[in-house]
Length: 321
Image (tube, rainbow, N blue to C red; front, side, top):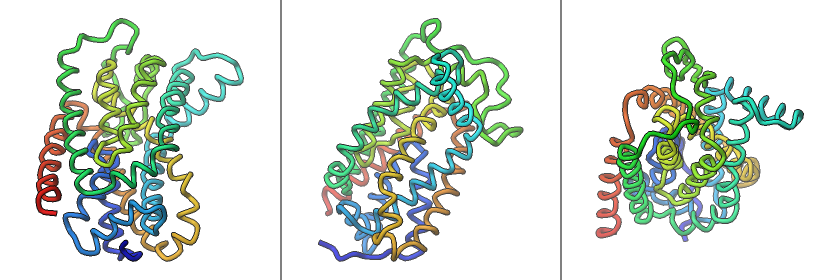
């Protein structure tokens, strides 16, 4: 087993930049934080091998990166989360589920339960088994196939039935990415559309996040595909994906906060801060970029990238060690 290797600040910033971008792009952050250092080799590859350990300073570092991304998502969608939390509280106190805020709050809750339970049981063994270059490369190709298949099936599918997803209105002044409102919030019309997904569809979409436990499968990607196949357009599928992933990322970080604050993180706290700042910067860029991208574009370019990058990595790590 490799000795514990404490990363440099350069490595911390580079990995932070990669993680922040790929966590929200539908191309798998875990897959890329395994594959890119493996391609670079040397001490970079040692960091990857530490990811499959039960405990290491690198895992404490990763916790910090995830929390940074979650904080960015909370900040960008702050007004949405205020409404969702308010809807959850009023739903409980009034014993009703009527308003879009209340419906959306409960959809997020029920959609998060499957991946939460699966993560508690499977996260560590899956990380030990699959956080390796060849496995990550194979799953990255599978991720590309999922994205491409989702786009093909969406185009062939019939339009959603009445009442499944309320139609999009012509005015969207509060959309994230609009020049007049870079707060990236959901407007009331968007909340109504998401609230119209329904409990069964929300559970199905949320459960798809379980696939992201495999290094190389993107949480945002599979969740977006689930949303597209349940009648959402690309913008709303992206929004729903970000709303569902926020509590999952926060919970995963909270469960391992002891790694960050304890002895494992003691020698890499400076690197954690540097990497987290880098991850926050690229996460913010990713949210704003994707908000614009999915107004008119699809998942196809990301699918092609995953297939090609995965194939190159399979050849590299499967045939040349």
